[in-house]
Structures are given as structure tokens and as C-alpha cells.
Image 1: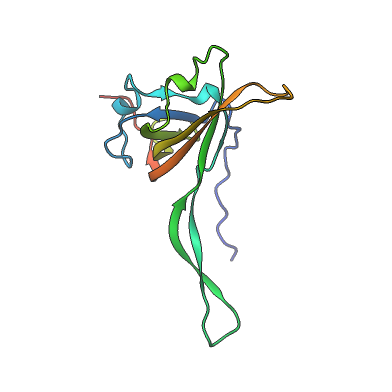
Image 2: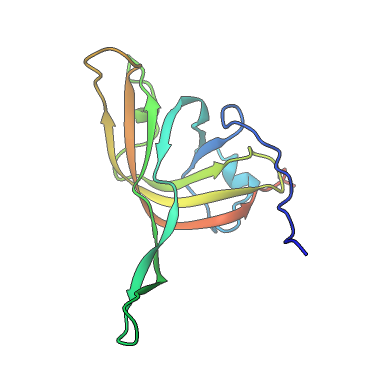
Length: 166
């Protein structure tokens, strides 16, 4: 008998679906509330995101050699976040992400890949902002950008997107 097939996916592309929020305060990153996501201090960054990298979490691989064989197996080791960055579009008058997020700020990056839809899953990264760097494209081949580096201090995966506040 053949193995069970994965369910068919509802394929999509990220634009107009995935959301990135900056949420300064989330009491429990494993269970953010709608009130926290909708707080006046929270920001929907999505429309200004040009690129995002390093928002993965992976385990180190630890070699486990022994004298009984020339083969060296590996086991999973410590779990580490990536070197996270978000590249934003810059505004000539500097009224852009630099007005909202500054070096040293602590807050949460909330990423809902399937959109902000109650019951679906998201990821939450507790962060400290380590750098805010405007870039210069001398060739003039792309729009001006601001790169923000985040140090991830904690994270939660498969977080349920909350429904409307009650």
C-alpha cells in the first residue's frame, strides 16, 4: 500500500497576502491577542517591505562520530534564529520606517504568511533592532531603501491568528 499523499495545496503568491506587523507589546508571543495586534502603537509594515531575509529558525547539526565506524552521523543540536533583516522602501523626506522603528527598539515582528485571517497560523519574533541603515544605489537602478537588522531574542511558531476582539 502506498503512503498517504499530502493534501493538495491552495497555492498562492505572497504579494497582497502575507502581512508583516511591528507590535511593540505582546504579553505572550505564543498567544497574541487581537487587541495587541490592533493597538495604536502597532504598525502594518506590509506595503513598504521590499525584501525580508533571515526569518527562519533552524537547528545546528552536531556530529556524533564513534570508533565503531568510519561513518559520522549527525543529530539535531541547539535551535537558532537567522540573521533577520527587513528591507523597506525609503521616502525622500525621510518620513518612512525610520519614523517608526529605531536602533535599540524592542518589539515583535508578527508574520502571517497566509494573511491576517483568524484561525490560520503566523509566527512571532521578539526582537531588538540592531541597525537602521539607509542604502544608496549609485547606479539608480532601484528605489531608495532602508535596511533594518533585527536580533531575534525569542520566537513562537504556528501561532494561531486571533479573531476579532470580543
